[in-house]
Amino acid sequence: ARMHGSRVAIIFFCEFSSQRGPKMFGAVRDRDRRRHLVDYPALDLPHMYVLAGGYKEFVRTFDHLVSPSQGAYTPMLDTRFSADLCACRRQYKDAWATRQGGAGRGLRGRARSL
Image (cartoon, rainbow, N blue to C red; front, side, top):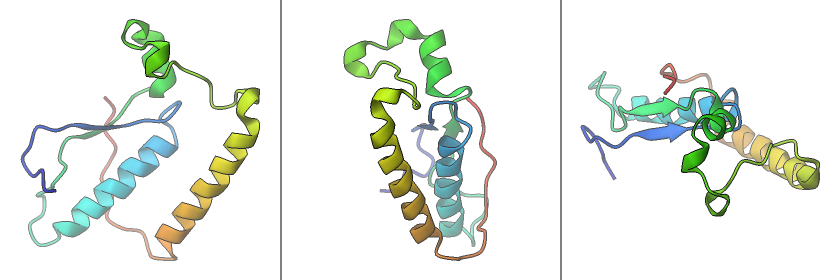
């Protein structure tokens, strides 16, 4: 669905917004730029941001907005979930390797912090 000119904001984040969030931002922006090579600087998704400080900082700053039923913060390195983390990292790495497929670097936008 095209959202060109819409006021929809997409916010990317991970625990610290230092790796996965910015990487996904870059992948989505790259795809959007490729769709608009002939009408640069048009974008379908012009309002994209990376959450400054990540989810950890968001929960610390705005704890009143997050309840346990909505996904209270659990650190990524919590030892109770070590096996899950290992499996997820492997899947994540494999998925990115497959999607990148040896292709050269694409057009990238700079991640803007929110």
